[in-house]
Length: 139
Image (cartoon, rainbow, N blue to C red; front, side, top):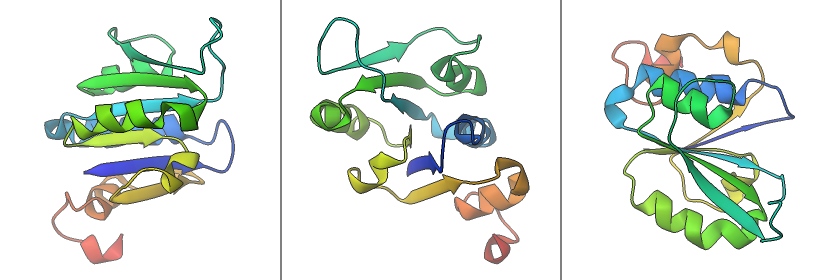
């Protein structure tokens, strides 16, 4: 399963929704990528760093705390990073990319736009992702 989670602005609950998806479907062994615009301090076009430690405040650490198998932080020039990002994602059966702009660049099964993450109940979220039983038509 390939999911892109975007939002209308910063602090809309994108990471919270990603963590809910991970926690609700731990059997999928998610690879999750956080994309941000921050430029690498070393002057390179981009950096793709794997997070190894769960806990704390960072988004990638939150992914691991929620149960992700792998968490990555991509920052810098998104377009320059696309070939490496695609290679990493191809190695994973199930992935989530937290980035609004990724929807135009990456093949995906679902693109979720976060407006109010608390409005969707867990059962409806699972049904939307094809992981629930009853009520799928109501999602």
